[in-house]
Length: 185
Image 1 (tube, helix red, strand yellow):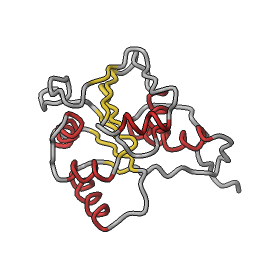
Image 2 (cartoon, one colour):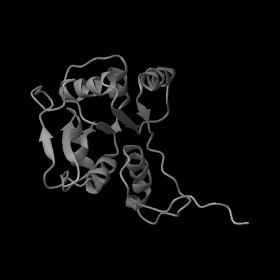
Image 3 (cartoon, helix red, strand yellow):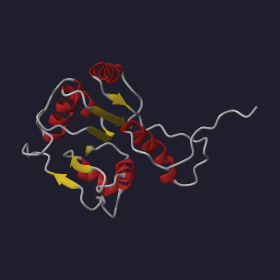
């Protein structure tokens, strides 16, 4: 599978890092693009910097000569993690000023998998309406809402509960945490 991971300037860089840690470039073609403000947030939240899996390819935000900016060569899936509300609004309204936004537009028009992981709260009516437009267009809105039934002991375990759901929606098996169990009789 060809997977594009896009990282925006929303807080929550660890979500992106943990997702990249789980993607195997020997099994999938991994591409990464950062929004213009993502670098500043990454520097604050990941002091060691973003670690790309060996074989993953980083792309320039302003370069449109990439293997996923055209409907003739779309990614199979794109995950925007974390995703700002500004990015959600621009994607919802087809504003494609850079390769991140163009790729999301391509993924929607080619009916591929677009997973958006917003981390911002609270939501305004504008946000909810943008969610509605994106859901109608075929996107998956997967808010960074972790679960706690598995009693996480570390921040990574909290984050992994969201990353696990992203991987579920990509169809990639993982062992990031326990699944909800059936009731005992």
